[in-house]
Length: 295
Image (cartoon, rainbow, N blue to C red):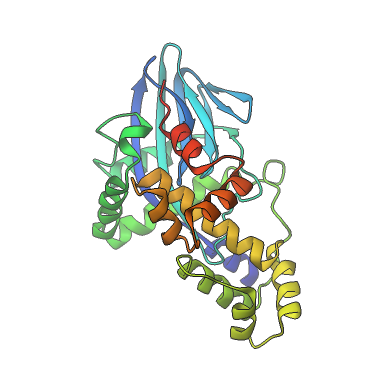
């Protein structure tokens, strides 16, 4: 039971938006890749989510989950009615719950799910996007900060209930037949400390030698222990987290690539661009253009 509690508390979620909307042909956007989760309940109409070449039909009576940083196109040819939630994820080790499972998920809706959506709307009034349903318009850092401030002002009971409902809805996609996580291991505190240091210092140069010295271990032993629990070498993990931070900054700000390179601890823009393309398969400029592409 103690291990189960640790597993649940490794991942927390904070609400960005929740609303009920009716959409038409204008809901037609390409190259959407958000730093937050999207969860839909479709109650009428039809639409599509296209991700990695696979078309997922949006049908009434189903829930759909799009994990953060999952590339997709959103389409509606006529009419689509949906409840939706958008929320951020935080984890104690910096590893997303769906890090190895970034795809589109679909499960039949239950009466409890519908009650949960309605309850979220009740205790979080005025949390819709309001300005536009266009990701290019509302995916700006100022909007994120505004809604995070609303979370901070929320009463403790409503805040806890909101988080509990999001956890319950996410759990619908974590059954053994849908979700395939890596085998869970209890992580040593020295590895936890290294992860915390990495995530708090992404704007600096971080070396494996530095992390090993902080853990009072030799580099080889530390690297083996790190890979055992994270499934990646320390240097690969560091680079991946820097690129993920860069993706977040590209999506949510208008920072130049020079500024983003500095904010993620890369020595030069050229080196940043080379590593970014190696990890994502595309250059920072193409990535930004794809994000902002709107039909």
